[in-house]
Amino acid sequence: MSTHPCVGFAAGLRAAHVLGLIMLLGCLSAQRANARMRRPVSHEIIAQMKARGLPLAEIALVLAAHYAKRTDQAMVYRYIKRALAGGVDRGRADLVLAQFFRESDRYDAAFATLVRVLVQHPGQPKALVDLWRTLHRCQRTRCTVQTDLGAIRERLATFGLHYPARLSADPQAAMRSRKLADSGYQALLSSRPRFAAQLFFASIEEDPSNPLAHRGLAIARGRQADYRRAIGAYLLYLSLAPDAADADQVDRILVEYWRKTSD
Image 1: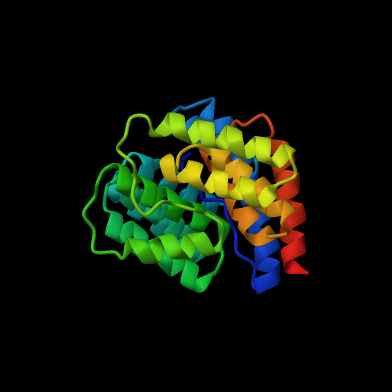
Image 2: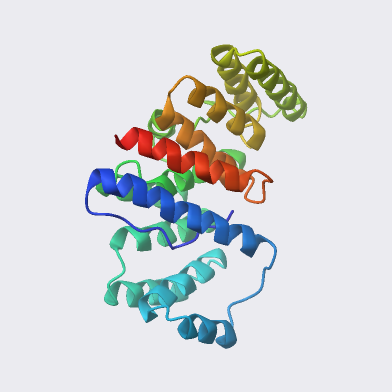
């Protein structure tokens, strides 16, 4: 799933949690639609955004994200500069900048940029998901970085986004992951959420890109009233499977859980 620049930040911490989730869900819905229609930004599309009343600064951020996917550094910086000049929050611009760094395989810069966002906005959901995706891409490409990846994994785990310490190179790992996830769902049907969570955890250890393992882990944690980490696992599930049949249902669960963590 490509990074989308429409995540906002609220002033208060409690308000930021709820608003950040709602805005992220809106972005995920937009990405589901975008996944079905990949076409370059044209003057016609820009005109349509203007016709809908989207401010010029927001259009600039959309264009920056578009060029980030194409790793066009000059255009990314040009439109980020315009977006910031128009009043777009620095954190939102940094999410787009981190996407550019990730797509350009500049992983240390991507990690540093996302951590900067999280320092200013702890628990910001879009930044956490992007941090996980950056770590996953880095590990898959066997990147060499100076960033402490162990610290990144620990930060993600705190919010329910699990990533294994070592990525399996075994071609059978994906199959083992599916079998473990199937066993996890059977444990859920048997009302054993704690055991189910262990199975889903093991499934992610085998293949962190298995969306059903993250979904199952979210369900198991929700049934144990571990709502904060359930939210993280659900967000990761939607990121890995933006066209999931139960996406709308998960959106509703996320809002409900976010309210529980804000009480």
